[in-house]
Amino acid sequence: MITSENISLYYNNTEILSDLSLHINAHESLAIIGPSGCGKTSLLHIFAGLIKPTSGSIFVNHTPLLKPRRTTALISQHYSLLPWKTVFENICLPLHIQKVKRSAFDARTKATLTMLGLNHVKSKYPTELSGGEQQRVAIARALVQTPDLLLFDEAFSSLDAITRDRLQSELKHLHQSTKTTMIFVTHDIEEALYLGERILVMSTQPGTVFKTFVNPSYHNPDAKMSQGFHQLSNQLRQTLNEVMHDAN
Amino acid sequence: MRINSLKFSTLYALLIVTVCWYVIHLLLNTPTVPDPLLTFSRLVNLLTDDLLLHLLSSLGRIVVATSIALILGITVGLMIGLSQFFNTYLSPIVFVLFPLPKIAFLPILMLLFGLGNQSKIILVALIIVFQIIITVKDSVMNLKKEYFLSIKTMGATRIELFKHIIFPSILPSLFTALRLSIGTSISVLFFAENYATTFGIGYFIMDSWIRIDYIDMYAGIVAISLLGLGLFLLIQLIEQRYLPWVQLEKGTQQSFLD
Ligand SMILES: Nc1ncnc2c1ncn2[C@@H]1O[C@H](COP(=O)(O)OP(=O)(O)OP(=O)(O)O)[C@@H](O)[C@H]1O
Ligand SMILES: [Mg+2]
Image (tube, rainbow over the protein chains, first blue to last red):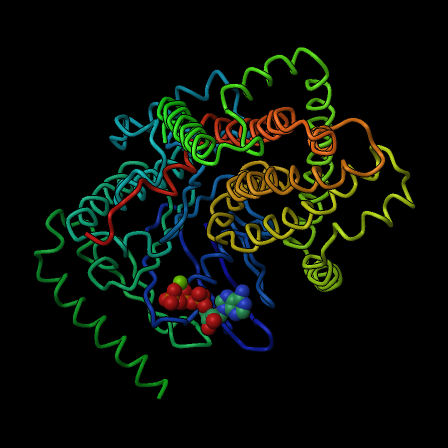
């Protein structure tokens, strides 16, 4: 799905990403974890086509990525919804932008609202919703355009534990049923282990691939209870410590 | 504030003000403070006469001046807010011009644009345009860049970014600026209408004053006040009707100190 070859990124002569090569398979679910400021958000924005790497190349479905593609959706931690639009209008937005026919419009929005259990808030404004509901709407907006690539930038980190667990498990089901390629940037080791079939640990700035892990417990229904989960969790923690240690 | 309670609170306030006025009238017992009821009935009579024409010509000037200021102010505000180039070369000029007492430029404007409507409209527009420029610029610059990320990822064009993000985002502070501008433009007009014109509510008031016709003068003052109040309420209603989310953002009144 995505291939990045030796990409690097500079902001005002500071190297943010360095010689980063990575291949993400179609239908894969990848978690990216790394120290703060290592360039995770920047990398995600490169995948979204929002910024171009300073050097190196990036391909999506074997074609060079030069600008945003309509079938990618990005969900960020804060302020992803427009406060001047109702929930319904926010969710419609991608369809507007993609010039979807009016007739198909309402049906798709309604189906998405129902799928995410948002019917009761559809005419409210984002400020009237809880943080969890807001992120749910942001996910609905991403899904309404039937994306083939979903990018999450710490999308759950400001939610309470219960809401977060629920959304995570819904997304995991969604991944398993739709096979949409998903990339989760997160600070949370548990989240990475729960949502990622593969987990990529990034180094400190300038960010690059430090190590990747295949997550054997991903397909285990009781993932969070399993032995493998705890083993890998410890391994990840250790790797993150190594990353920090290398930096000093 | 809901629309119904807006109606109610306006009526309530008008009543209190009138009662106070009446009490002062009784206490002072001088022709300088006439009976409010007498004034109101004179006002009604005058409206069928030429006062309406005075009011309408003032209103016309305000509407034209505000429209010019809005178009110009939004354009320049967006240019400064969205482009580094204009921010570098235009905003220092705006910054220097903003605090100047533009009303003092009336003589120059009258020399340049004549004594008629033009100079008065330009003066009012000149005074409120800076407020609008600065308001628009500030709200664009304070826009969360996160708003753009998801929408750009969907493949939105520049026009769509304007339509869905930039334009709606400037509306709340634009309405605030407009409300403030109403008061300013009426005051400025009152002043400017005393020069070289025989039409306008400002002229009517000062003319009555010279004629020592205090009831007429008061009727004029009430008329200009109602004009201001009416415009103010109109803006408030439009905002409530078309920008319900602004009310939510501002939140309801809370007793933080309890
Ligand atoms: N537009 C920009 N201009 C200049 N520097 C930037 C810009 N965006 C990001 N940076 C810098 O790039 C580095 C990486 O930022 P990025 O947001 O990608 O990190 P991150 O890994 O997502 O961090 P966090 O975990 O805190 O979200 C930071 O040092 C940041 O200061
Ligand atoms: Mg980040």
